[in-house]
Every structure is written in C-alpha cells, then in structure tokens.
Length: 496
Image 1 (cartoon, rainbow, N blue to C red):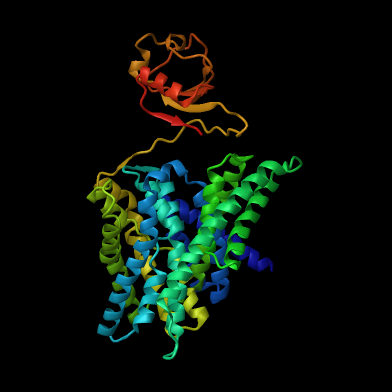
Image 2 (spheres, rainbow, N blue to C red):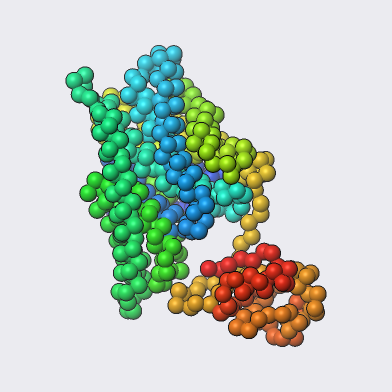
C-alpha cells in the first residue's frame, strides 16, 4: 500500500513540474500529463483496467464540467447561447456523420474494412470537443478573444459531451446488434430528447437546491464543510439524474451554471477549492489514461495510418464543415471567427474515456477504436493545442487581457461595488491630487498600486498616469458608469 502511495505521489509531482514546463514552452499542460502517464505505464506500472479508467474518468468529468459551469457567467454566454447550443448538438452530430463516412471509406481503402456502424461508433467517440482541454488552455493563456469567442468555445465544450455520449451509447448498441435486431432511429431520437430534458430540469433543480441549502445551513463550526457539501451535490446531480434516465453530464454542467450565477455563502472559498480540485481531477484523469495505453499497440501500422488520417480529416474537413454549416444562420461571427472556432476543436480525455465503452461492452473492434482515438487525440493536442494563441493572433482575434491587481475576496453579504481602474491623462485635467478628482459621495479610492507597491491614499496624494486604483462604492452601476465616462475612463474591471 505504501508503495502505491509513493508511486502516485511521484506521478503527481512529475505531472505538476511537467505542467510548469509546458506553460513555459506554450504546450498544453494536459498533453504533458498524458505523456507522464505513458512514460510510467511503459516503464514502471502495468495498468490495464478499462472499467476503472472509465469510472475515474466519470468522476473527473463531473468535477471538470461542474467547475466549468461554475466559472461561466451567464451574462457572458447569453449573447451566444443559441449558436453555442447548436454547435454542441447539431455540430457534434454532423461531425460524427462526416467522420464516420470517411472512416468507413478509408478503412476499406487500406484493407481494414470497418463496418459502417463501427465507423460511426469510432467517429461518435471523437465527435465532441474536450471540456478539460479547452477550459485549461483558454483560461491559462489569459488571452482575450473578440466576438465573444471565449464564452462560445467554453459553452460548446462544456455542453457537447452529452450529445457525444448519447451517440456513443447508441452506436455501441448498433455495433452489437445482430442481423435480426434493429435499432430504431425514432426511438434513439426520443431517448436523446428525454435525456436532454431530464438532464436540464434536474441540473437546474439540484443547482437551486444546492444554493438554498448552502445559504441556509449555517455551518459555523467548520467552514471547510461547505466544500464537502457542494461536492456531494455535484455527485448527486450526476448519479440521481442518470438513475432517472436523464443525462448526468448535462445535469452537472447546468448545476455548476446555477451555483456560479447565484449569490452563495463563502463563494470565494468554494471557488478556490474547486479550482484546485479540478486541476487534481484533470491530472489524475490524464495520468490514468496515459497508464492505460499500450505503446506497442499504438505503434502498429494500421493504428498509425488510420489515427493520422482520422485526425487530419477531423481537423481540416469535418470540424470546419460542421462549424460553418451550424453557424451559418448566425451573422454576428466573421469568417475569421468561424475559422478560429473550427481550429479550437480540441480532442482530449473525453474521447478517450468514451472509447473505453466499446471495449467494456465487447465490441469486436473495440481495441482498434481505442488506439485510433488515442492516436488522433495526441495529434489534436500537439497540432491544435499548441497553436491556440498563435492562431488567434494570426487571425487578428486576440487582445491582451488584463488581470486585476487587487485580488479581493468579497463576501456576498457586502453589497458595495468593487472595481479597479487605471489612471489616465484625462483624469488629471483638474489636478494631480486625489481630492482634485470629481468623485461622488459614497465612493472611495481605498488603495493605489504603483510600480508594484500598494498604499492607502489620502486627499493630498498625488496620482500618476498608470496608477491602478481600487474603488469601493455604494452607488449603482449606472451612476458609476456616468462618473467613469465623465472622467474619460474606458477600461474598468469589476471585481465582482
């Protein structure tokens, strides 16, 4: 037992160091986690449990999807809600269909001759973008994207796993069916609709219940128990929804959205807990997947050929065609924006986890499917994951996203408005002292940051261009906006 703990401690340590190296060189940290698992699996650890990997992946996805929903502001996704939902449903189905047709034809050409149901199954496992990869890369890059692309990509990646899951389960049933068995298309569509509806309703209801319970339970003796309580709601949302024939992954994501967009007791502590726990879930999931892969099988000619071809077709044809077709009704996106959405169709842990279902279910070509999906995912992370920022810059869609200097943890019981702004020339037209600035009543500048130093100002404190001010006000947002416009201030960061 002690040896197992030692091995996992070493795995986690090496993974974290690898993540730091990955960030320095612009590579996705999750790719390095996967690589660490593969190295240990090849040389030190014999791990071949697809059932355990599937279970660990399910737990990790619950945490990742909930945390992604919790960090997503509804005000940000509201303008792109319709295109995001279309991408995560119709876009996923169209990607699977195009890729399935290609796999069926290409496998015949190279002598593998995969049946069409098996080809569709392989394509279905890879049809969704990976929430863990997208959330991780977009949020660690600290890069702003114009045309609301970041919330669009995060909404799509967080909500398209249910569609891919339904397609995978349906295709497993189709691949296992005998000549006398028929899988009704109408029945499959009805099952999908029911799962989506039940998942949405239960996700919202359990989210509201979680908010109500945490705000009313009043655990004064141990504040850390709030995190444990919310974690219980996460797993309850997934398991109970799945038990009543709903889609648990969708329910977990919506539960996170509800919790994150409502006032919550000790919200700062809860967000910090789930941020760290999400990273742990991602690391463990990618390490276990890396341990699971058999490098010798991965290097077989048919896996290399089919995996490379599928990855190329997915990146260059299936994903762009599905994006351009599904976003055609939405005129707010430019061609460059659609190209970028096409490029950030990363595959990651989710397709690999879904690729374990054919093996566990006993599909004849299950091992080939798993290895091909793994190879295609590696190529996607290497090609697309390392160029997320570069592509945004090349298409002219990126801008520098400023981080707030004042990391203020504000309880929900405090109703005041906290904001951070930068001193400009126009602010100093009436004088350089703080008292010369026309600041309304019930508004205070409580701290100044200058050249890395922080200090509390007084009325006779001289301001300089570039100073960052922490402003606290009991005024309404509209009144503050009028003040900022009068002072010529354009860039204001709301701290909550």
